[in-house]
Image (cartoon, rainbow, N blue to C red; front, side):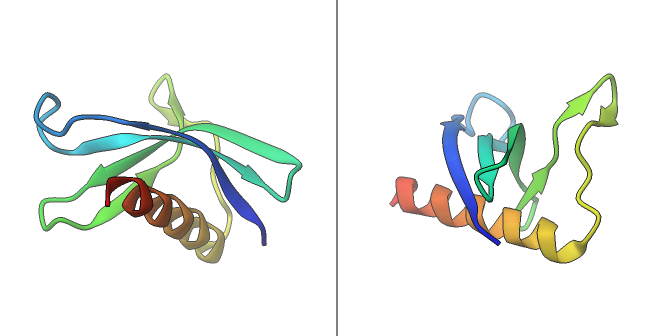
Length: 84
């Protein structure tokens, strides 16, 4: 599956309590774009994603753990590439 980070909006950890690292817009297979995926840091330093939320409900929900992990891996790799 071809997943590409189209845009990444980094945040300074100092001002937001250290959890929110940034927002990502991704494109899947060139046919679907998802905007506003949050990249967050857990208390142990690991990175995870949260799909876009509107009114307290996720508006995008991957149905397989493999797809969720592929999206997370692509966003984390992109983030590490721009940070270093």
